[in-house]
Figure 1 (cartoon, rainbow, N blue to C red):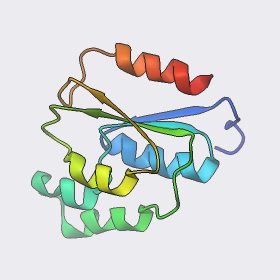
Figure 2: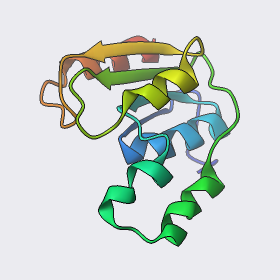
Figure 3: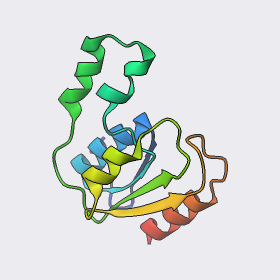
Length: 121
């Protein structure tokens, strides 16, 4: 990935993709947007009957480094899948939050497009 990442790069991840976007955004220091991120997949994925070994594998990737000003987090006010509380606790005071009136499966993408425009400038 180092060969294709540049200052112009933007990583966007939603839900479990937000978990991975955080890891790669920090690793490569690029602009990143997390949308309803699942930051504790070892906990949130238990309801899908994954083995404890599979769930524990996510702990290997847990990122303890700090976010930068290059990160934005978009949270849906009616998200029925991802618990916002761990996200708010982890990132409070560290990055910008944008709240949208959506559920987990976002239908109106305009606020996301607006945030992409802002973060790319």
